[in-house]
Image 1 (cartoon, rainbow, N blue to C red):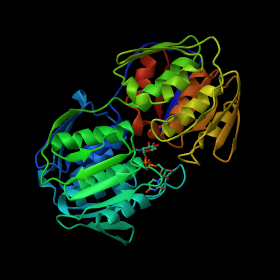
Image 2 (spheres, rainbow, N blue to C red; image 1 turned 30 degrees about the horizontal axis):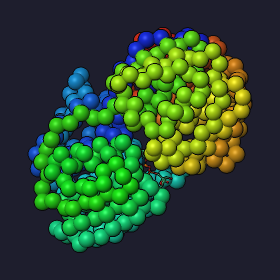
Image 3 (cartoon, rainbow, N blue to C red; image 1 turned 90 degrees about the vertical axis):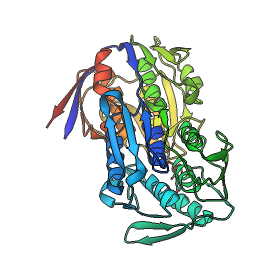
Length: 421
Ligand code: UD1
């Protein structure tokens, strides 16, 4: 299992090119299965989660060609015939559950494993299933699998998501676009990843009104064609590197290929830390301030502060002067990084779904354990400001969601070595 050995204390100076978004790519990869001809997705990141999903597509009979040098993914769905996504693949990545909507939407039948547990507490899929039932799809459970069956044309219906869910919105869109007379999703997710999916589906020939709002109205069409698109940049990678630039003393980072509009409330909140931020088109530059200010945040659905950024924010706050609170209202248990940061010297504790942080504390290198994707990158951020050397164990979590992380950071001054032990 690989680990990172990180020597802290070196400033980051230079330019990093932002990769394509994992969470935006996965829904459109699933959507490509709805076409009657191949699709091409450019700017697809080389990530473990993408490789896993490619394998799920291959299992059902799609032809998948990932030209990794070019980050170009070609998917030919015309051979899909085995309408089943097995547990050993779905358990590796929850988003494989998108196969349910894609297969039942296109073929009228799907058998997909329930995703199983998650490192950050319960992550139910009840809304995906209730929404499909509201659409008129027959849902049954059999030995850990969901079996979905749908008639050719489903009657007009609607469903309200409570709470709003990215995954359920994606699955319902995938199921609905070819199959319903008319289906309305109320309180739909408005995340850029959902907007990209809607635009992808419309380009394929789907009829969706209300894109970018929380009411999506889908009128079914008879067929969809394969298309070529550029995947969105990864807004969480952008935010993570902005935090690196702000919290590592003397850093001066330029991030290219960003979409600043996708940052939602993250950008104005970030400016409150005193970091020197400049946005120029698709380029964002961040200079570390002399002293970071403590800023409390609370995660919300988009355009609120993203839950995928709260661990990195809490890590930055260990280096800010004063007290701050980081509250996660989306995932209450997403704080497994707190004891690990404490091992490095952070002064923080957890009360329910709020981390209370007292800065600024010097961090000192130690061995720490990655527990999930965003917790892991937070440990890398902490290690880069810590004195001496930090070992971050189990970095396979990082390989799921950050393309070439250590290469990108080392190119701008970090000292990260990957060790296979
Ligand atoms: C996606 C992202 C993940 C991000 C999260 C929130 C992907 C692959 N993953 O996850 O990185 O952290 O959005 O921005 O894009 N819920 C239910 N029942 C359901 C579904 C969700 O109660 O059936 C609840 C969840 O427990 C959570 C909230 O809804 O409290 C939002 O979850 P959701 O938006 O569905 O997250 P994911 O799509 O799984």
